[in-house]
Image 1 (cartoon, rainbow, N blue to C red):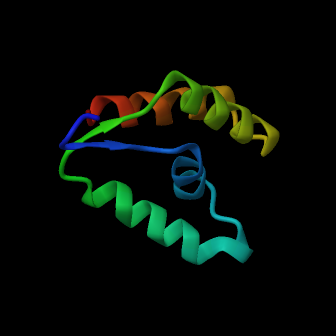
Image 2: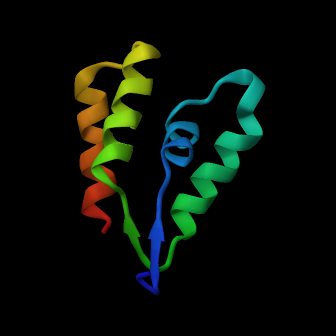
Length: 76
């Protein structure tokens, strides 16, 4: 196990990106968690694929998905 690294799961990214009315609290928690990560974050290829798939099902544009992934990757 890599000490000092935080593995980011798909649901955290999805809740941070999407803000459905019934899950506003989960959205707030996910955003806060991502903002407060002090260690290196790890996002697997599987998580990136799942994240993209969920956002596409929610009619998020391809360019917005790519931008989000690039922004998250640049922070690591």
